[in-house]
Length: 155
Image 1 (cartoon, one colour):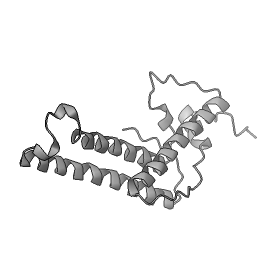
Image 2 (spheres, rainbow, N blue to C red; image 1 turned 90 degrees about the vertical axis):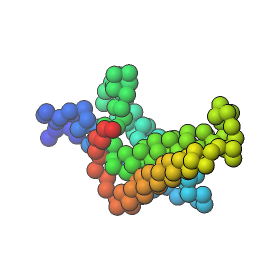
Image 3 (cartoon, rainbow, N blue to C red; image 1 turned 60 degrees about the vertical axis):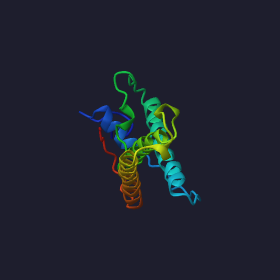
């Protein structure tokens, strides 16, 4: 009987990682604010993905060059982890966009922007907020569905 920790015939490192990943236990985060709660949950998922990948990397003496394979931690990730990571990317874009309203290099305070500029800013903010909420909802749906088959979703 082969050892469950050894590579199976024709098994890749990605298959090995996928086979040994463990999902993060369900978190009970009591935060009322939607954005803060989503950030806490999604950040916990992404951090767990990283720690779990590193655990497997150490256990099996795998070595990934983070310079050549910067997305190696996505190997064997669970679908809900992929949505959590995507939600954080949307949030990053949203926060960057929101900061444009308050930046000194814009040259003028938001209230003195032309009407079409403010309308364009709000339109883009709405689009970014919608993308963030959509990814958080996808994360919740997949997470609540207990679908724990790891995937390799590359952007």
